[in-house]
Length: 195
Image 1: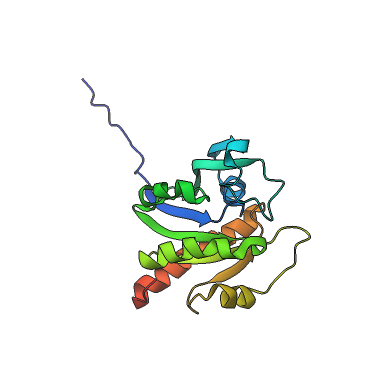
Image 2: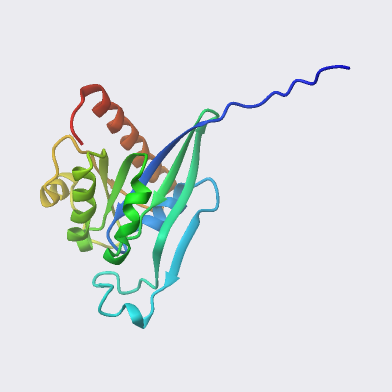
């Protein structure tokens, strides 16, 4: 009897990246813009129950919110896959962050200049855990633009942390953010600079 050889493809290495930031910063949009699969979204409609709990200042037209996570995937090559996990933005869902952050290579902190102070919680979270991160300033249409250096100064982040201007709706713009994050992680590993 002839032996049948099973040729199996190697299992790709998986890298986990978090996408964090304040409520309404564009995390769900960013994950969806770059994912090669239909992203998993756990969005629910904002209801009157959230009035007084969810601050919609600056994002009054927002009608939904992520209640657990967003998930997307990008295949870099047959041996490397990035998994993107978008965190929920409201304080009441932050208990999920520890589970989502377990095993993460690094993070993208998506900042909205209309609500820049909402970025501090994510920055503090990753700094305290020594998780490498980049700041991606989501440049919305018709909003006042600031330079990356102005945002760096306003957020008081160290000079080695990349700050980029991006459009969370644009696939190539988001890819650039992810490439910058991976390069930042590699630089930190080589130089042993704290996150």
